[in-house]
Length: 376
Image 1 (tube, helix red, strand yellow):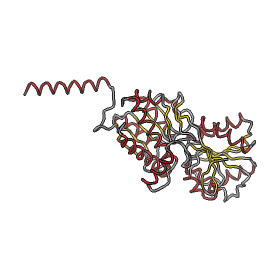
Image 2: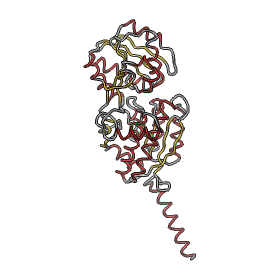
Image 3: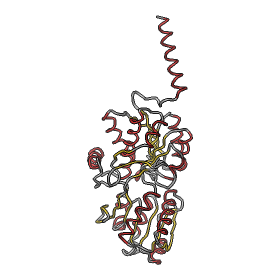
Image 4: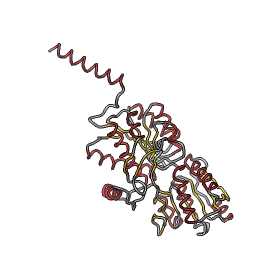
C-alpha cells in the first residue's frame, strides 16, 4: 500500500511538472474552458454597450454548451467604462490563466488594454471596437466589428452613388479613438471620391450641447453631414437637430447608428443613414433564430452589440473546436483561418483579414418612421 501511494504521488508530480513546463493548454475547470469577458457593467458605457454585449455572450454560451462540442465558462470583469478599468480587467484575466478574452467594446480602451494581452500571448477578441489599425497591435488581437478602413469606403461608395452628394460636413469627438479614426477615414475616402469637405466640427466626450456646431454646419449648406461618435453623443447630436431647425436637405449619416440612438433621438433621427454590421431583419443564416431566442430569453429586441457579441463567441468556439486545443497559440492560428457562417452582414459569411479584422458585407440602413430599414 505504501509503495502504491508513492507511485501515485510520483505520477501526479510528473503530471504537474509536465503541464507547468510544456504549456500545452489552459487547464479546464470541471470540463469547461474558462473564457475572460470584459464588459462595462457600471458607468456610461454599461447600458448602450456592456449590458447588450453580456446578453449576447450569455445566449451564445448557453447554445454552444448545449451542443456539446465545446463547453465554455465565463470569468466576467467590469471595465467600469474606463481605460484603467479595461487594463486592470485584462491583467486580472491574464493572471487567471485564460486563453482568450472577449468584449473590450471601446476602441480607446482596446488600444491601451490589447498590448497587455498581446505581451502575454492571450487572445483579445473585441466584439465592438472598430477604429482602424487596432488589430495590428499583434497577432493575438481579433475584432468582430468592421474596422472603419473596411466599412467607410464601401458605405461612402454606396451612399454617394445613390445620393450624389458633392460637398459635405463632418462632426466628430476629437478625444475618442474610434471617432477620430472614423473621421480620418471619411476625410481620405471622401476626398478620393471628389467630395469637398466644407467644414469639420469637433466636440469632446461627454459634451451635451452641439447647437453651435450644428449652426456652423448649416451656414455652409453641405449636401450631407457625417457624424463620428459613440452612442451617447450620436443620440445627443441627432436629438438637437430639430431644436436648431436643421434642414432636411442635409442628409445625416452616422456610420455606427443603432436603434438605441434612434429611440433616444426621437424625431431628430428620422432619415439618418447608418453603416450597419447586423440587422434584425437580415436573412443571414441563423439570424432569425437568434432574434427569436433573444426575445424569448430577455423579453426585448436584440441590439447590434448583442448580436456581434453572440457571433464573436460562436467564432471563438469554432476556433477552439477546430484547434482541438485550449492553448492560445493554437486558437489564434485557427481563428486566422476562420471561414465560418455567422448572423452578421448580408449573407453571414465571415472571415478575417491578415491583421485579424473581420470581413463580411455590411448593411446600409435608414431611419423611416422611427425604425431602421434597408436603404434602397
